[in-house]
Amino acid sequence: MNYEAGIKSEIDDTSTVEFDEGGSVSRLARNKKPLIIGAIILLAAAIGAYFMLSSAPADPNAGQAQAPAVSVVAPGRTTIAGEITATGTLAARREMPVGVVGEGGRVVSVPVEQGSWVQAGQVLAVIDRSVQTQQAQSAAAQIQVAQADANLAQANLDRALQLVERGFVSKADVDRLTATRDAAVARVRVAQASLRELQARNARLNIVAPAAGLVLERNVEPGQTVSGGSQPLFRIAKGGEMEMLARLGEIELSRITAGESAEVTPVGSERSFTGQIWQVAPTINAQDRQGTARIALPYAPELRPGGFATALIKSGTIVAPILPESAIMSDDSESYVYIVGDDNKVARRPIKLGNVTPNGIVIREGLTGQERVVLRAGGFLNEGETVKPVVEKN
Image 1 (cartoon, rainbow, N blue to C red):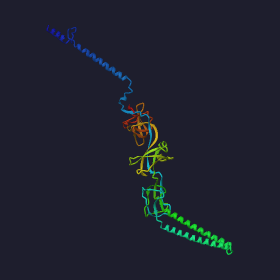
Image 2: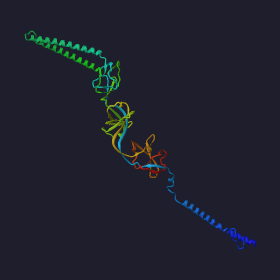
Image 3: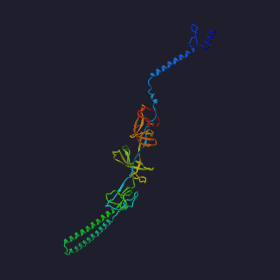
């Protein structure tokens, strides 16, 4: 009785055992059945999910999540005031070299200095003329001698003409006296011409300015001996006018014409000078493929011939893309940008740069403006690399 009562009490408390036909207790507990069933269901679901994932096609954009994100922009095209920047040297617009035009000699005095303003005909240097002065005095005396001979010949002729009517002088004597008189007069003229020649030679011993202007160079000092054919003693800028010899490439040279204005800034000066192109070179240098645009400038102390300067030439308007400096890279051979194609791969594109504007750098060649250009971090990309473009507003 007690044994059966204990068994029933256990059954009532746990409700987890059963009796078989022989009256013994079963080992399978009823509360464990749901757990086993749930585990079987979870296992079946996991196996089904594995096979579904393994049989599904690959996501074409799966690798895109791993690609680096880069900022890109389509720059478009902008109308820009045409400006061409050029460099070159300053020079006198009309430089006049002044040297010895006569026989030369020892320099006595040089009354002008480098940087002086001179007038046309002003004496720049005086050469010793002591010998030439004596020669001129001798020539003047020769004129007096010739004139005396001419006067005597004229008097003899006059007396002969008075006697010819009386028959004391023949016609032949008159002709001879006439010829003597004519020869004497001719010798006077020769002597006078010789004197004028000497005076002209002596006048050339004074080295004078051929025109008004600014003395750029003085290459002579008192006591120096000079002669004809030697190097110029002075260089003068006619009227003080200056110019800039701006060097330009073939494309830039074709875009400018005479008459266009330019702003010239000498190196070392913050002041700019307004000039005008007065001549465009008709030829191109075969070595550097450049030509010269000559920009006329008024005189200013800052414009020193031989100095270096930068010119900003106004040349109408152009339409071209503009990019910030961060998007542009360069190496030893060229400037370039990275563009992102339709397949999101990076490609290198060579470009040619134009003017620098407040909005960025003008791209003169290489872009249409519709490309997606990498704005930043281009130095960390490789050509052909796949990226995730993030478009920024221009």
